[in-house]
Amino acid sequence: MKSRRFLVIGLFVALLVAGVGSYYASSHPDGLEYVAHQTGFIDSAKDPVDTGSPFADYSTKGVDDARLSGGIAGVAGVLLTLGLGGGLFWVLRRRGPATESQD
Image 1 (cartoon, one colour):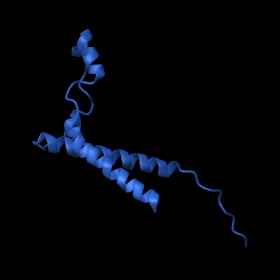
Image 2 (image 1 turned 90 degrees about the vertical axis):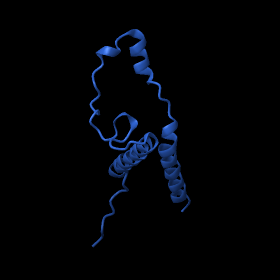
Image 3 (image 1 turned 90 degrees about the horizontal axis):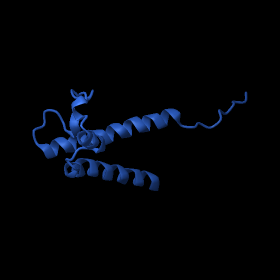
Image 4 (image 1 turned 45 degrees about the horizontal axis):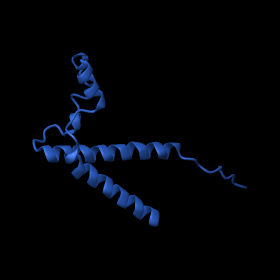
């Protein structure tokens, strides 16, 4: 029961950080964008493939409030990562040796 409680608390903290903390993330460009700007090849960059995505640029399409938009995108990212990671672990988990039935 303790591990289930730990997982629930961990999920709650992850959702809280993603939903609330994402608003306070830095608005400065990431390292690659900074270097591209400093060295002069930022103009040769192509548009990212996720430009039409509902969560492109760490915001939610159709939500005008920046704080709410970033929070929804953060929570969706946590849930998506948890779903994909948990599903992958579930599929690839080790199973014990098959027990043979004795007739």
